[in-house]
Length: 487
Image 1 (cartoon, rainbow, N blue to C red):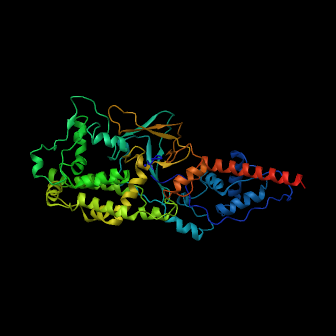
Image 2 (image 1 turned 60 degrees about the horizontal axis):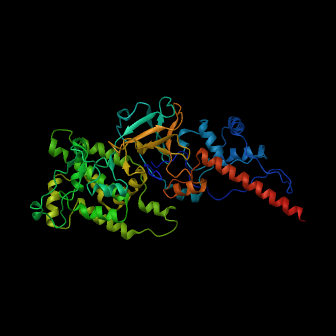
Image 3 (image 1 turned 90 degrees about the vertical axis):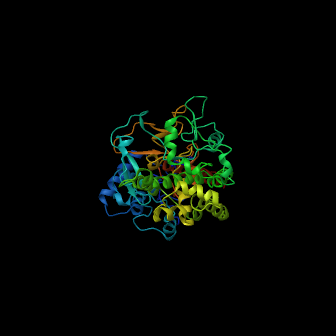
C-alpha cells in the first residue's frame, strides 16, 4: 500500500495525463482589460454544471466544459473540476468513472499512457466481515480499480478495523534488529528479557552444522511468544538460514540494495510455497485451499511491472538497472527452486516436497513474473513494510479521511489500526494518502506519476490548481497593467 506505499494503487479520481493543450477560450473581454478571471464558489459552480448537464445530457465532459466557460466568461474553471463535480453528482455513468478519456475520445498520447496504469482485481471469496462490518469492497473500473466503501456512518476518531499482515518486510532498522535477535522475527516487536521469548526451533548446534551446506548458519530468529512462533510457520522455514541456507544470499542481496520490494516478494513466495505443502502435512480433500486462498490475495493485488514503470515517469527518462534486476532474479530462483550446491538442494527438498501448480510457478519464477511481482510489492506495501489484505484495497486522496496507525507497539508492532480522520458518511469511499501531504500539488502529482497513477485530480489538487491559476492570472494582469503604465 508507503510515501505511504500502502501505495493500492488505484488512486481515487486519477486520470490519464492530459493530451495536447486546447486552444484558450475567449472571455469576451477587450485585450486591454485588467480584471482577472475568478474561480467560482463550489456551490455556484455545482448548480451551474448540474443545470447545464440536465439541459444538454448528450454533451461529454469536454464539450460541457467549453459550454460552461462560454456562458460564464468571467470564470476560470478546469476540465478536471467539471469532471469531479459530475462524478460527485452521479452524472457520469459508473463504467466511465475513473476513465481518462473525455467523451470526445482519447488523444493518441493519452492512449499510450493508459497502458501504464496499475491493474487489480477483486479477491475472490474475500470475507470483509473478518475485520469489520462497517465497510464493503467495490470495484470502480479498470483504471481506478477497487476500493472500500462505508456501509454506515463512521464518526471521526473511530477505529474502523485492525489487521495483521499477510507478510512483513519491515523497515531496515527493524530488520537489522530481527537478524540480531533483538526483535520478533514475526511481528517485529522489539524483544525484552521475557521468559516467553522463544528461539527458532531449527537453530542448529555447532555439531549439526558440520553436515550443512557451506552457507548454513544458526538462525538468529527469536519470537515474542508461542503464538508468534506458530504464525511464523507460514513463511519462516524458507527464509531460515538453517532450514534453507539458499535463502541467505537472496536476503543479503535485498539488504545490500535496501530493496524492500524484493524482501517482500521473498516473504510472499515463502508463504505461497509453504501453503502448497499443507496437503502433505494435513492430508484430505480440499487441503489445497490454503494455497488457493493465499494465491487469490496475491494475484488480486494492484500491479504494474518494472518494465512498465520504467516506460512511465518513474526514472525520469533514465535507463533502468536491468543487470541488478537479473541478478536479483537469479538469487530468487536459487533460493526457492534450484540452490547452487547439493547440500542446500537437499535441505530445500525437505521443505518443499510438492511443487507449486504451474500457474503459480510461472507467475513467481519466470523473469517476467518476477518483475511483475516486484511491482505488486512496491505498489501495495504499507509505509513500514507490511502487506495487508484489506488495507491493500485503500485508494488515494491528498485529503484522506482515514489514517493508518501502529498502535500495538509493545505487543504487535506489525498490526495496523485504521482510524477515521473525520466523519465518514455511508456510501463514501475510505481514502488514505500515498504521498507526503506536506508537498505542494506539483510535488504530490510527481510522486504519484512515478508509480503509474497518472495525474491526481482529488479535491485538494483541483482546488490548489485553481488557486494557482487565479494567482498566475492576477500576477500576469498586474504585470500587464504595470507595462501599460510605463508607455
